[in-house]
Length: 374
Ligand SMILES: Cc1ncc(COP(=O)(O)O)c(C=O)c1O
Image (cartoon, rainbow, N blue to C red; front, top):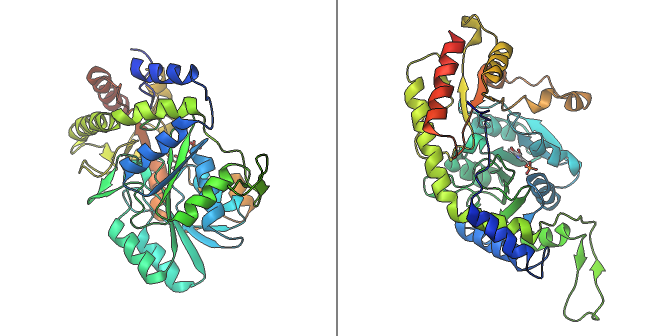
C-alpha cells in the first residue's frame, strides 16, 4: 500500500490546462483571473463581496485589521490552527480562549457567559472546525443581543451548509475566510479569501491587500496614494486559474467526502472508535476526526501514530490547544479551564479524508486501525 496521508489535493488535466492557459496569457498576476475567481467564490458562497489573497493566514490578518482595534478582546477557540488567534495578536488585540463543545467547535453558551461578565468584549472568532459550521441560530442571537463583531474562520468549511446558510455567506457574521492550501477542499497551491456583505469592509480589504495604495480617476496617470500601511498579500492569476477550475468540481469533491464519512461512520458504529459527530449533511468534512479513550487500551496515542505510519497511514492531530503553545504561555495563557478541550486533545486524531482516497484504501485504514488498537 502506498503512503496514505490524512489529506491531499485532487488535480486533474482540466486544472492543469487552466493553469497553462494563464501561463500563456498576458497576465500572471493582477489580471482578470483574480477578479473572475473572486466573483465565482462570492456567487458560490452567496455573499456580496470576496477578496482573494495569498493564503488563509493573510486573509485572517487583513480581516483582523479591518474588524479589530488595538486592545480589543476577542473570544476564540483553542481548537484551531495557530493562524486564527495569531491574527488577533497581529493587530495587538487580545484573544480569550473559550472551551469547545463535544463537536470540536467553540462553545457559544460559554461565549455568552463571558459576554455577560464583560461588556467590553468586542468580537468572536469562530472556527467551523473540520468543516462543521457553528450553530448559526446562536451566532445570530449573540450578534444581535450583544452587538459584537463576528468572524467565521471557514478555512475547513467551504461547501458546508447549515440549515440553508452557506459557509462564507456571512449571514450572521461580519466576515469569513477560506484557505486554499492543498489539504483543503479546493486548492490554489497557497491561497485564501475573505468574504463579506459590507462594502466598506470590502474596499478596505482591497486597499490593504495592495500596500494601502489608492488610485482614483482624478489622479495624474502615474499617481497613487498610500493611505494605510498595507501589505503585498496578492494572489496570482496562475493560482486563481487553478482555483476557478477546482471550484467547478467542489460539489463533487464534497459528495465524495460525504461517501467516505458515511463509510467511516458505519465502520465505527458502536465501537471503541468514536466519530467526533456522525453524518448529518452539515459538515463538508475537511477532516474526519475520531476519539479513542486510550486510558482503557494497551496502546498509547504515540504508539498508535508510530505504528500506523509504519503501515503507511498518516493520521494527524487537529489540534494541540493553541493557548498551551510556548509563545502563548509566554504571554500568560495556558491556564484557562477547558475540560472538554483537554479530554478532546487526549483522545482525538484525524483519519485520511480526501476525494482521491479509494474505497480499498479506506478499508485498509479502518482494518489496520482496529487491528492496531486491539
Ligand atoms: C482553521 C484554519 N484557519 C486558518 C488557516 C490558515 O490558512 P493558510 O494555511 O492558508 O494560511 C488554517 C490552515 O490550515 C486553518 O486550518
